[in-house]
Length: 224
Image 1 (cartoon, rainbow, N blue to C red):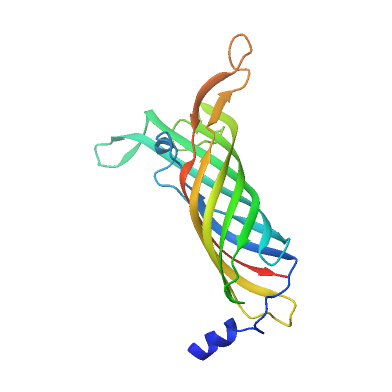
Image 2 (cartoon, one colour; image 1 turned 90 degrees about the vertical axis):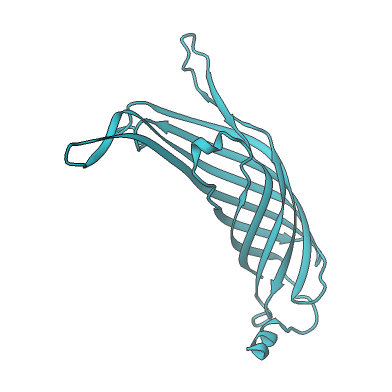
């Protein structure tokens, strides 16, 4: 096993010369707003695609897009005499937030060997969320007596440290790699409003959600 791992990681001793990289990744940007407790029982990771363009052996410009969904529901119950139960129409709610997060920025690598490279990255962040709220256990318009459907955007930045492990190049044309990174993120609040819902045609503000704090991502991809 050790000899196989060494063979996979060993290369010619020189850096693999590439122009582009593509990777699939998973991770999260921490939700630091207490109002998220209404939107989800626990934060779920997002997933997406990251692409890169090599400016030099040590500098790469990265761009990624992640999507995810956070949801929660609550309902009151009443009991029949035979101890079966069903949802009460007297109370309950359902929420769903669809997330889109776009990162763009440089990555600076320290190529300690041909197969291992710690790195640092600073990236701008654009966030778009769609919020849905309804009665009962569904945000479907057909199933929900009251439906809130609103969207909002925010901007921010992420700073992270990570490391990259590279396998031996295949036919000197492609190279598989994996990576992990962790850091911190800050962003503006995402303010949600019901458009043109007031009697005078103005918007009705319904609150905001915020991101910020911890950040992590892991991924696997190829350079070519």
